[in-house]
Amino acid sequence: MSEEKAKELRVSVDVGYRRHSVAIGLPSGEVLEEFEIEHRLEGFQDFFSRIEKHNPKQGYSVAVAMEGYNGWARPLDGMVRQRGYRLYNINNLKLARFKEIFPGSAKSDRIDARKGLELFQLRDHLPLAKEVLQEVSGTPKENEVLKRLTRRRRRLVNERVRVVNNLQADLQAVCPGLLEITSEASNQWFLNFLLSADTLPQLARLRKASLLKIPAVGRKYASLIEDWQKRAHFGAEVQWVSEMIQEDAQRCLDLEEKIKALETKIEQVAKDSKIAKILISLPGFGPVCTSELAGEIGTIERFGKEGSLALYLGMSTLDNSSGKYQGTKAPKHVNTRAKAAMMTAIDRHRKYVPESQKYYEKKRGEGKKHNQAIRALGRHLCRIIYKMLKEERQYEIRPRKGNTTTKVASRSSLKTQMRRPKIASKKNK
Image (cartoon, rainbow, N blue to C red; front, side, top):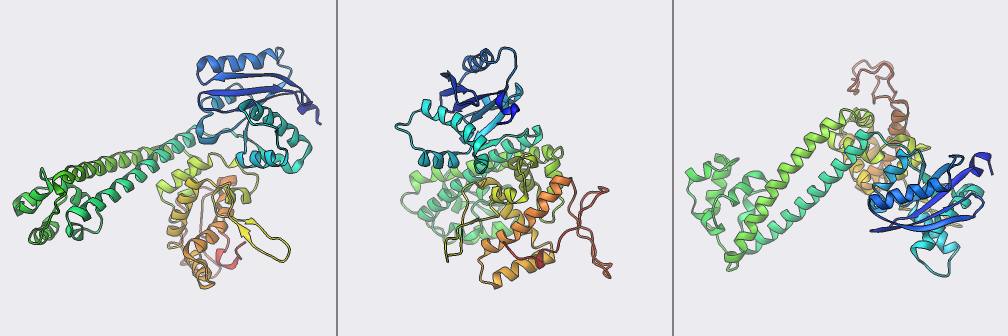
């Protein structure tokens, strides 16, 4: 054991909802103290005072390991970093596997806290277990803000989808034929039309002059509404479902306004994010997707190699070969939010870059499904993105020799530009 690790005070925290179990120990395996703290200011103060009691002369460096699942560790994790302590995240999947290999006689929060100290020792003596405890790198403030804003936006978008689905189901049940006048029930003009009368049956009696006064309803949509009015039919349930439908329509409009306001704020914050400014230079990568990726990635220093980034973004698989069987399996260490943003951005990217589109078509020709071909292309883009973020370079398509018509796709005038590899000539791994 190195001299640096020998002078390390180790703290393991089993994160709970209202209370956290804590174990403090030494690299030798000796447990100095075990206690519980409340998830409030007094508990946090007690936590740090007990650590300082075992390190009065600051002779030891302090390493704290805790689970970050679902954010229950906040704000304690931030306070740990502010104190200058090293913070480690306990990988839940690796911890579960560790418990299977070294089972205990029982399970409790106190035992789980001790397991964290054992993981520190396992990490010291077994190099393959380094990823069990993952050191948390400092993340720029703007990326932390982007993570919160984009996650909030995603929740609102998902809520809008659920409300629209309920709205369509109710309309189909009590007013068959009304949905045929619009391609999407979430269209603003259609929602305004549903709210233009006190009840749904009154919509069938609105005159053209009244229809033209409805926001976003012009002559084209007014004509469609008039055609529907001639054959309008309402079920018996419309008497009590009408109010529910109009409440859902109003909720859709409110959510749309909130989502647009969030997108405006996201674009403003993204101007200060290095990751977002670099990713936006990729053709097809829009402001929302790049902001989501910047927020979820946080800092490229978290990833030791490009393969780790590809795994985190869901663009890579794990080898699952055994004997004569050759195959892969889907990894569980995937950030699903970042993967969704990446899939959307890559699908748009291939339409802007001919080489990427050719590679996508090649994979489809091999029998791959759409999502499989997108992930194969994304695997190559992860190599490029990792290089771009490491060297803080923008994306650029440079003209080939003898071709002076190719345009540069970079959106920045950085002095150092990166030559884009030929994606279509590489094999998918």
